[in-house]
Image (cartoon, rainbow, N blue to C red):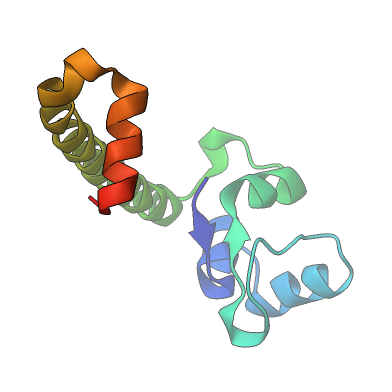
Length: 114
């Protein structure tokens, strides 16, 4: 799930930043990463602690979550394109050496630093 700053988390669940920090200090709310001013909290953790059904999410919360979801979808699309590009590069080099077998091709490639 998405990660949120303390300010975003407070807005999402409808509490103050001070409450978020108190819950972190008491280990009621677990931090996903960071410390000090760079704390990030996972959406799932907010839902676990504050038990918010989807109907209670504020429009601002929904907008933030939708924006983060769209950014994650863009990242996934870029990763898929990169993987496909790598696959294409690998597959175009292998056929010329196909008759020797993949293992021989890999050994040759490793020896020549290709």
